[in-house]
Image 1 (cartoon, one colour):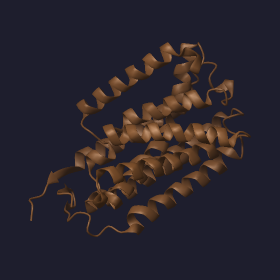
Image 2 (cartoon, rainbow, N blue to C red; image 1 turned 30 degrees about the horizontal axis):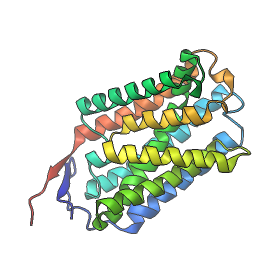
Image 3 (tube, helix red, strand yellow; image 1 turned 135 degrees about the vertical axis):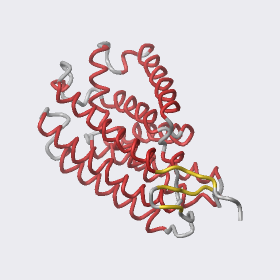
Length: 276
């Protein structure tokens, strides 16, 4: 058994012995299904991404990306965190120095990739930046649902099988959930092709998250993947200029994520419990 426990404002906890399939598997999957249904109702039905609607974009960002994509998963994560099933390292909330380093290296690698393969998202650098900001809210919600919530909970449930089984199980299942979620959100006539692309992106993102355990760096990876796969599916009206609505939506979701990170870092910490 993992010998880490959690000590926070509610006191020490005993670890993962009280965890069950209901808390580690069923509830996270229900949250993911509700998130997918909300995406369908808010974005797919009105064709939000192919027909520009700035009020609709704000509504989608607040409800689907902010509330259902971040805050609701965090409530479930907090319960698992307090029970000792997962810890700060596993959910990808690291120190400021570690986060800045990981984000800097990942951003530099991503920028280098787009410079070398500029045709992946078009030759316009300003357009690429606004496209990145446009996909940020969706990427943050996808990372929180697929890996911070479901990925860590699956690994906690199968951790007694060893690291290899834990990583392989978490990677495959979360990649499938990511591919299904994004295929629903950005549905089109070429469902099989786009599903394959999202599944490949999900595998890359899952392996990256489980290897580096940093939420913000993983968001950069997922956002970059969405840019490559979906840059031709977004109404150009969103991307013509640095539209303040698009920028507001991007920074709103990042602000919510940073606020939650600050709360966890301030009130909870992982401590090593003595061996029994």
